[in-house]
Length: 366
Image (tube, rainbow, N blue to C red):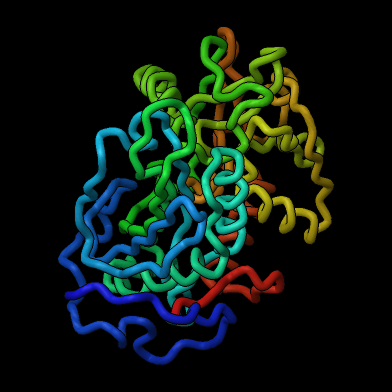
């Protein structure tokens, strides 16, 4: 299938889909995948989007093309100096037959902010959203049936031009690819066990912890592997200054509930401003809960009534226990806490359009 330019942005307003939805645009049959066995792992799909930007910082119109490997110089800025960042979002089948995205404009804004922090030309929102919509549309046959998973969407921005010396690259590439995925944590909402790390830290003040820089993730692989080797689902990081305030759960935001009050670490530049995090805060507030964005002392978290983490991949995952310095704190008797469950059900009902989207968050892919 030859590449073609991407035209005007697809409409973002939500509306009922026709009987076949986006699948009516495709001739290909559904891929031979056991949707029930789907895991959170990469699977090659059909098409991808790619655009470039030169030293004039002007993004050119991108092209849709068959999914393929990239070719770049060994001196590319992203390979030598890590000048790159990414986004993560999901497209999924909704109860009304539509394929929908969830708050994609927030991902566009976050990528722009990250690009500025890493010295790269921001991708215009219109270009970003058009690329995401078109990539999902041309891979619509890979969207799992409702309740079986989602199509994970990965926008990626990187310094692809050659550079010798620590400086911004002379050329940049923005691309979008997708992969069908199952749950990030096995068992879905079932409570998971976590371990607090005293040895490793995710980010420090003044660094790049507040953006999805590619360099933020490789250092977390060993702490995560160590925790999983001990039987935990993931690691919890404390702050790098005082070593006492909870920051993030691996690649997800942390929440705890005590006496009906929901707390989550405040955005001070060391944790990611998650789209799901912001959505949970808004949903909780709309339901009458008090939500505090604040520094969360590790002892306060260990004494909480409920804990959970939230992110695009994890959605809302209940935390059943946390181990720290030989102490194991257990929550809700090993069951999902009532407030955690209420927020999980409210969020997923909006994402799958099983409940009215009073916030205007879901966007139909046409």
